[in-house]
Image: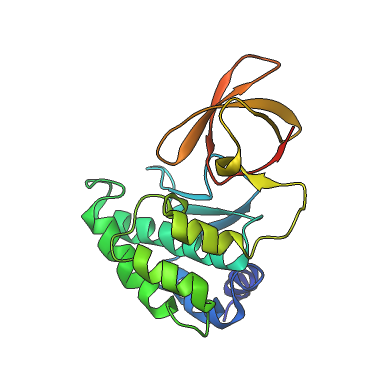
Length: 205
């Protein structure tokens, strides 16, 4: 294993379940990419991008995810990478090609040696027809949330009533209408509107 491969292996090992490390690393080794651990983002859990002038694609995953959420997000983005390598951006980002790739890549991880039974049950159901965002599946989102670090002051935005105020990233918001996976929220001080994921952890006012 080269020095760079050891760096990637170590980076992956810090964030995914122990029994999934080698499987996750092998996905990188088969089709390498720049792998970046990103700061927490409320707009997304991870992303994939490939610029025409760059040799390697870039995959980022948020550092604040629990091990199980991190692994699912990682494989989700790797599936984008595999599809891009084959189709060069000529297919829909979350179309049948991505779904099939995600299902194929995720299958070896769907075992009780990697996931607790409650997550695995929800994950198996979700993977029958995976959507663009794993947290759009409320059963999987709730199962994963149970393994997040506990902050007694926090609740999910989904649990807050419309019109109520909350703190997110030290800013005061008012919850507006809920859409499919996101909630339209008004920042009180600026009057600007933002879309926040409905499972984002917030502190109610």
